[in-house]
Image (cartoon, rainbow, N blue to C red; front, side, top):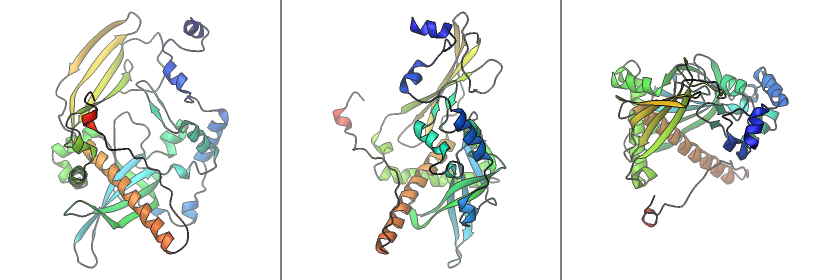
Length: 358
């Protein structure tokens, strides 16, 4: 057939992802794109620095929390504790730092146009396809440990009584950050379980506390977590090649042997906590088709780290929306005619009674 012919000609390999090809997603960057990425990496032009609006936040303790195989680290979190000059009370501002892609792929640039053609990054079991060339996505656009990185930072305070966002506290600014700790979800869970996250690294415990309160607030406001009474599993498959402890990004070859297929199954419930029902690892020898599998036991039931990251990101989105409304309202009142365009998405309330099969 056509598939076998293309494989024989060397156009495809035996494990070619035909579904991805049918989607039309560009899997390669052109030479022009690669050249533009190289030039962007060495560019010293930064309008935000020239305008003196990029804040230096390198003194903040910034945590990034991702899976161990993540190479594109695009968000970090911090806490800024300070004394209220009027009341003398201790206040905490929570910061979410997002990698500043606009610094390296500004509007009307070749790199941004290449990203628009893709509109998203795709993560597959054996490799990933980024919106940007990997030298940018995993390089200057990534919040790397102990490296000065451009970011867009959002700071917000939370009412200690009802957990609501204090709108007048919202700050959005270009920034320069330096990641202090590059952590995995498992490491954060372990630090919290052993008490390190409430003592030496008290910031983690404080963020878990506010994340728990924020989840409660969202449930009280009829978030989807409240409507769902069942657990929804999320499966993350990874391909681990022989003698490689982590997944790598490369094509499968027909001569590959002893390829481990790791399934990480996470389920969330309406309490806002994640429990792992188990992870199944199958070792497949492609040459002769033999497959063996085993179920890993002893995986933690709950993941405070996942709750922490999820709620901090949701809080950042809500705060940014409120900030945008504030700024647009101020512009209208001052008759400047300026509105801030913010992307959003919405959907009708689900009618579960009419969809029993779901």
